[in-house]
Length: 74
Image 1: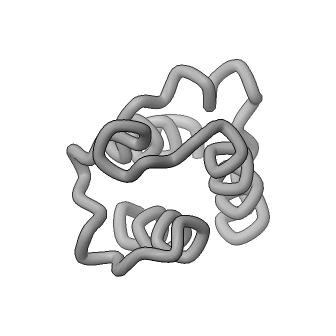
Image 2: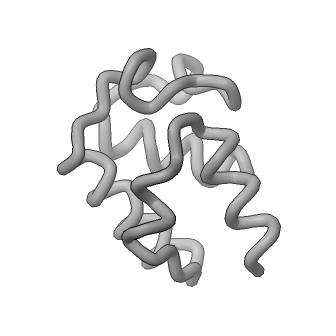
């Protein structure tokens, strides 16, 4: 699951996936803004057939938060 999320984030942010760690903070480490976060959520929903409510996605601070949510809400 992490690898799939990592690839999506790398694609959206235009960075190498090696720069994206499980503990990476979306804002502080990866410089993602709210539009990036929305794009990441949309891509995850499309590519992983997952549904992430907006109010949940705004709570995510790290890549691990996203992965944990996806694994717990299959």
